[in-house]
Length: 215
Image: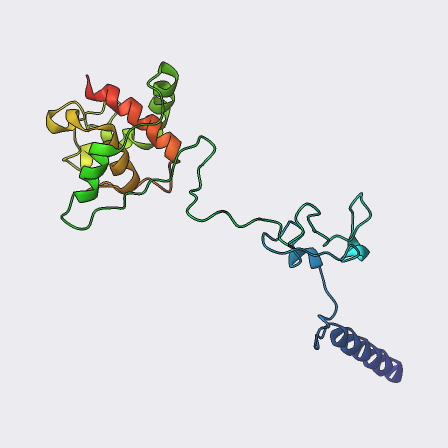
């Protein structure tokens, strides 16, 4: 009985060693691949092509009967799936808006803020629809501090004093570029919202804030 048990243990050990050796990689041999799609990208790699139509044939689910890893673009003969854009071109988003170029001011400086205030204009029309969308976004992101009416009396404003009233003093004169710059980069105790609010939504908030300035 004990002899049989030892033989089973030995057999299991040999099988385990054989299985582990099959996973080893050497030279160009990657060894046994488990879940190969985890590290072989099926989507196009932007600047390269796999032109071998049988690459990944053993796991392919494609209807064109090519290998899973084949990604050659027949319309580009230069082995590139993404053409290099012309020099000095600028990426635009789906609305045609250019990237916002003014950086955050350095400590104690308002140089870029002043440039934005004077030169940056809202690309969105002043319509009821845009303003209403801005109101919804404002209530989500801004009202906790600035209050529903923009008087600085939100729940946070009741604890941390000094939040401005949009309709009071110099704040009623803030330009659209000034408001957008502050939403993007923050100012004073206000943190930036560029990572939370998309550029087009920031401009919608600007439209709504301008209505609060007139109250």
